[in-house]
Structures are given as structure tokens and as C-alpha cells.
Length: 213
Length: 50
Image (cartoon, rainbow over all chains, first blue to last red; front, side, top):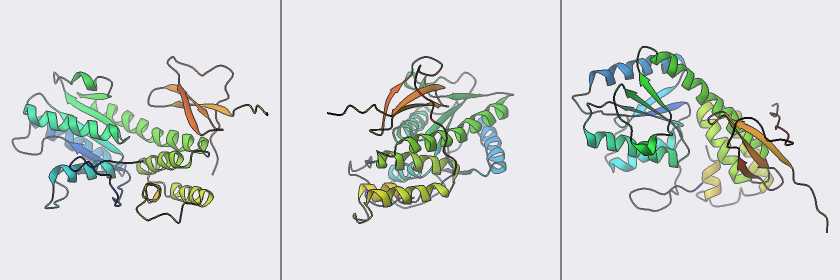
């Protein structure tokens, strides 16, 4: 697939290393952080550690370069983006969080919004699944992660039906790999590449970039 | 001219809980079901083992 950098409009033509089984948290990072956001992050952290899912946020990397491009690349690298919003957050912070969810959806990532009670959600995100932070939060998070992993199986299953459309099959396998971290999917991609004879393309060709995960 | 029948299967998307129809002959997702349940007379694709 072709991805356009938000800062230049140019196509991303160099490899970005993927981070399978990793979640990007989009939320307020600057102080004062609402208390409930801290509690939500602690609960997510504990559950993800148990389930071997890594967590990153915009503060996880310092590149010294463009901040938006850094976030865009971090979102590109992971399978899951979780937005955490609270009505006490500054409006502009909430705008940034929903922008990042939009970027993630455009890239075909799995997304979920976690919100505190009484926090409104923009109408464009009504169809985006959300979890409300309450006493049943851990249970709801667990159910969501269960469905997240099921999605990887679905992507792999779809890829198996798309033998006649190798780039699409590779894209589905890439997304399945990002969710599950199953390295056998890389072998499947190698097999597809052998069959379609595109291995002699330039290293930064769309086909090779797509399959190099 | 030969008129070969297309190889069409369906799979349920767990995110939407709806079936999608895939034409394997041309490698394309051709439809997303709007209501619950599978399409009539379209086989459900089996998962490959291994």
C-alpha cells in the first residue's frame, strides 16, 4: 500500500521498522494529567504486560525532528491505537487525539477510544468502538483484546483467498503479522513473492516495501 | 468462448460480525453483507491448515 507523509505529501519510500503486538496510546502527556487518565493507563499497562503487548506513546522516542512525522511513523509501525479521552482535557489536546485516531484508521490500524463518563465523542467517531471507564473496565478491555486478536485470524484467512491479488494478500498478511507477531506469516509473504517474481524490483519499490516486514 | 464460473466464497469479519463475499478468481472482495447471517448458496471459506 502507498502511504503519504502528512508533512510533505510525498510517498513514504524508506522502510519503517514495524513493532508487532504493540499499542500506541494517544492521550494527554503534558501535566496536569487528569487523575482518571493515570488510572486508565495503569490498568492498561498491567493487562498488556500480562498479555505481552508493548505500549508506546509520543514520548517514547526523541528524534529531534518533526513531531507530527514522528507520531505518524509510530502509528504506522504498530497494529493498535488506543485513544484515552476525558472531558477535563484541553480541547486542543482532544483534537490532536482524534486526529491521530483518524490517521490510524486511514492506515488500516485497529483503533479503540477509551473515555471517562460524560466525555463527548465527535460525531465522526460514533462508529468507532469505545469503552467507557467504569467498574467493568478490565472486563471490557479483555473482551476488546480478544476481538483484536481474532481480527488477525480474519486478515490471514482473507489473505488466503486472495492468491490472484498478491499485493492485497501481502497487505492483509502484514496486518495479521502486526497484530499476532506470528513470524510464519513472513514465510507466507516470501512464498507469494517467489510466485509473482517481483524480487528483482528496486528495494524501495512499493511491492518490496510492503512485503519487507 | 468459454464461460467459466467464478470461484466465490464468503468469510465473516469479526469486527462487523457480517460476511464479506470474495471472488477468488479475480482476487477481489466484491460485497459486504448488510444484515446478519451468511449469503445464500455461497460456500464459507475454510481456514487453511499450516
